[in-house]
Image (cartoon, rainbow, N blue to C red; front, side, top):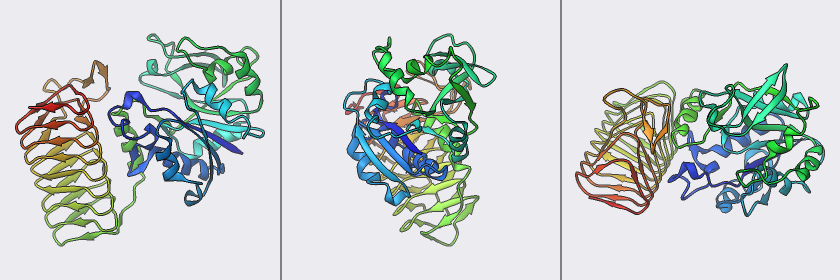
Length: 399
């Protein structure tokens, strides 16, 4: 069976992380999110894939090419203007033959759930309970049949949401041809599917492994979930006096220096320098070429390639882009004094602990203090002893 994966969007809610890369190329356990989904699709028995690309499409093409390195066959179609999911599916019309799998590229989903959708037959959609259904399309279900499908609303009726994976057949194109532009100004695949509901033609299947990634802090939850499957694999060098506790992966060319203590699960890329006397814990992934130096502690964070926290730094519950440098003594707070959940630009993160979201090429001077929930744009420079708080626009200077 063929599979269409929608990977055209920028992911504006993920800024500043998506200023320099497509959303689906954001890393989880040091691999792009989309790569994990492609591998799961392959393992489910669907190796023939069409990627619908758009925003920064070359980053996706250059990584996956024809898919051979990943055990799949990949073709591409470009959605130049993001006019909705139904428009994206229309781009694949000439390529598709018979039944097919359709899914969003910006989610985490395991192969067993994909197999369940494949076995269910058309027309079927995946659903999952959510703690914040107002962020998704809400689905009403009776006896495994969809009886209602409503796009995002401030007052959702229930907590079952559309997970963005469907088993469809060629009839969907006739339904797409009937729909008009939605209130959001797009052609929505859910509007086409809604035409199947009155006759009981749309079934729903509960998923066990689905994790959506809508906001930067959702990367941390998805990352924590995926790190549970990490296995120890040390390909770099580890000096005497290092403690590796639990599953720890170390890439080729990386050096873990004496006195360093690492509590897994922890994933360290290639050509990294860790320590001496660094402390890393709690579902942390460190990309290629990073330096985590003396007396630096990193906890439950994603650090992308070529970023340095060289000495006397603390980073917790944060996502840091590539090519950043933290000056000596710079620390990131991750917990409010009152213990309340952290809000970012007025949006609830549903997290009690959240540090900072940091774009690429950020330079923080010595002894900077980064407050809880700070969002630091790409190319920001902060001087010595600066207090970094709230939202800092791309390229800004903080003194």
